[in-house]
Length: 307
Ligand code: GLN
Image 1 (cartoon, rainbow, N blue to C red):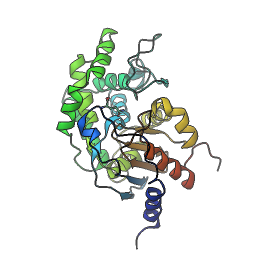
Image 2: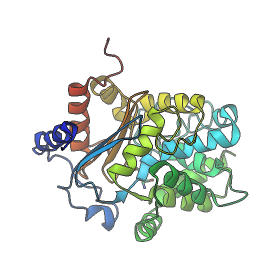
Image 3: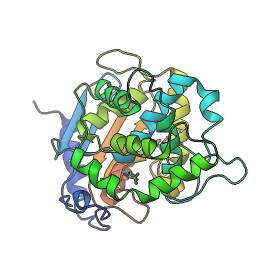
Image 4: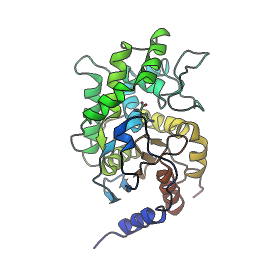
């Protein structure tokens, strides 16, 4: 018998079909050409059961949803204090690609905006394998399948990567980049160009809901403390300059990506992933936010809800 959870998720897709505001990212042809009407939603509980409906086989680039996982990897590599000395944890209130560092500390404000994510990528240990290979191996362990880079997309991102290169040079000038700027940006862009589905993302998010242990393989990928820290940063910084709006309405730690994905994590309970390519003014999926709002309301996900 078909699970009633799948029927409920189908209803989420139907009830948000009218949300057609926003537009696909248009800075590269691969993203601009995405079918704007594709939509998918997936849940994965902390015992590893995935429920997915809609365009569940559709692959899209992970983009900024890669940032939390690379950050957790860097923390596992070096310890939290080392990373906190180099990347802050304060919401920036600015756009994701703002050309700025904290004027008082000279650090990127947080690891969820590009400045902090480029610095973080460069901090992932790369003695034995390039940082991006380690990040991809991590994605594959989280998603329980080989996650691969969309090389065409990565090439387009690199060809239009001046702003990210500018950020990397700024970091380098302040002595806060562990690699040379072009290597760091190339690695970061490849990290963002990994292709995933909502099914993959729900599994990835459920590992964070499960305190850092992949629920199906039982493998600990992040310590409980790293996971708690990461979720706190996602709660305050994951939705860029819409973080306050998001947290008051949906109320769970989350991260969005410019291809239209959003992951959300209810600690101890469930990982959620949605996909819809049209973005709002903050660069978050417009229908994705609507889907998450409904899920949060119907399922009582909001962390500030009593009982
Ligand atoms: N590739 C994008 C960038 O770095 C990722 C950003 C995003 O998803 N918001 O510009």
